[in-house]
Image (tube, rainbow, N blue to C red):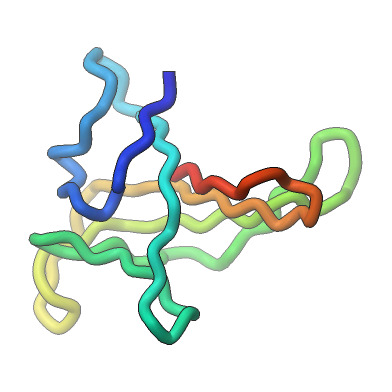
Length: 107
């Protein structure tokens, strides 16, 4: 089961995950952008998610066709100028294939 949540309205430790002992959770969420249309809103009440890797191309298993991009984000508590890095990370996938139906984003 994959939960659909408004991801950035929750602190990582408050995410409504499927209960269990698993430390890997999957969510589907829609990215929210600032009014300039380029920057993604990744701020929560207590901190923010920071992209900590280069974009990585995701290829189709059966070919070398690009189907998406993967980003790795790390959660920081506090404001950008005075923040503390945590051990919370997400892997965020964005589809890029033109024939991909109704884009969704999975961390």
